[in-house]
Amino acid sequence: MLLSKGFEVEMYTGTPEGDIVGLSDHIVRDLEGFVREPDSRNVEYTTAPLCCYDRLLCAILRPRRELRKYLGKIGSYTLIPGSTLSLGGSDRFYRSDPNNPYHSYIEQTYGTKVVTASIHINAGIADPEKLMQACRLIRVEAPLYLALSASSPFIDGQVTGYHSTRWHVFPKTPTHVPLFESHAHFIRWTEEQIAKGTMQNVRHLWSSVRPNGDRRPYNLNRLELRICDLIVNPISLLAVMAFLEARLTQLLRDPSLDPLQLSKLNATTRAEDLLTITDANEEAVAHRSLDAQLQHWEDGRKILARDWIEEIYQQVLPIAKQSGIACFLSPLKKILREGNQAQQWLQQYEMGLDTRSIMIGAIQTLEQQEQELEHKLCQPLLVA
Image (cartoon, rainbow, N blue to C red; front, side, top):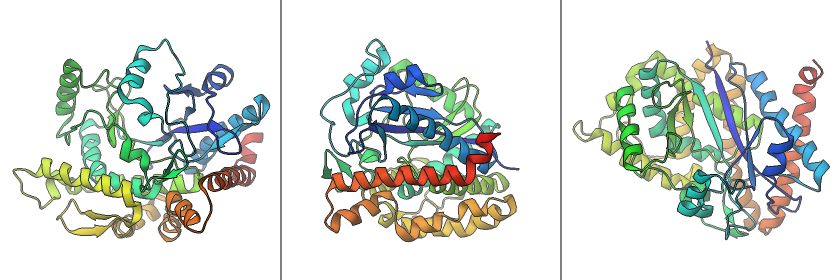
C-alpha cells in the first residue's frame, strides 16, 4: 500500500535572461491553484495528495504548463530554476501583500533571507505516534535530501561557496526544535513556543522536517520535509519522493529504526546529541552537498553524503520493488553519478561560463524538459 503524497512547489518568475520579476499578484488574481508568498517574486502551487506516481507526475507538470502559458500572455516572462536570487535583487524585499501583518513581521525580522524557492515534500501518515517516529528518523537524515536537491550556489551573480546557499542563510525557526518524543510532547512544545512568542502561529515552525495536518498541533496526518532546494526536473523530484517513501515504509514495517531506540550514542544525552550531529550535517551539506563528510546518527562514524545515500538506497530497493515504485526510485542513481543541480552549474562555471549564461541555459533546459514530459506522459490525461 503506497502512502499518499504531494508537493508544495515554490518557483521564481522572471525574464528569459534570468532576471527575477515579481508577478505573484497577477498570477494569484488570474489563475486558480496558486498562492502568494510574502515576496512577490515567487509563487506557490500545491499538488493534491495522491498515491500513484504517474498521476503525481502530471500534477507537478500541469499547473506549471498553465503558468507558463499565462506568463507568455502577459509579457516575455518565464519560470526560473534555482532556490536563491541567483542574478540579483537580494538587497530589497518586494511585498506581495502590504496589508498582511504576518508578512510585515517576516520582512522586518528576516529580510530577503526568506525570499527563496524550495520544494516541500509531504507524505501521509495518519497515526500520530508513528508520524512522530517518522519525523525523528527523517529529521536526522534530512541532510541527505538536501544533498540530492541542492540548487542554490549563486546570489546576486556571485558564487557563494555553498551548494545550498538557501539552507545556509535560511532562518531556521525556532532556533532549537527538539526531536519530539510523542504527539503530546509536540502539542506541549508548540503551545509553549506560541505563548513565549518564539513562534507567531502554528505555521511558524521552519525546521527541516515538521508534522503537519489540518489543525496543528492537534490533528496531524502527514510528514512535511522542508529542507529540499527546488528540484525542477519532475523525474528527479519523483526519485527523491520514492527514496523518502521507501524509507518511511521501511520504518513503518520495522519501528526499531527509530533513532531514539537504535542510536548507539550515550543514552542519557542521546536526543540532544542527535540534534547536534544533525545540525552539523545540515551545514556541511549546505556547503558541499553530495561531497560533504557527515557523521552517521546511528554510531557516530564519518561518512560521505553520497555513500550514505547509496547505503540507504540498497536497503530500500527491495521495498521499492515490492511496492512497484523501483522505476521511480532508480533516477536517484543518475543524481549520484552526474551531480545535483548546484554541482552541475558550478561545473559549468569552472569551465568558464558566467552565472547569467548558466541561468539562461538552465531556463531553456527546464522548458524543454517540461514540453517533452508533457507530450510523452500527460497528453492522454489532458485530453481525457
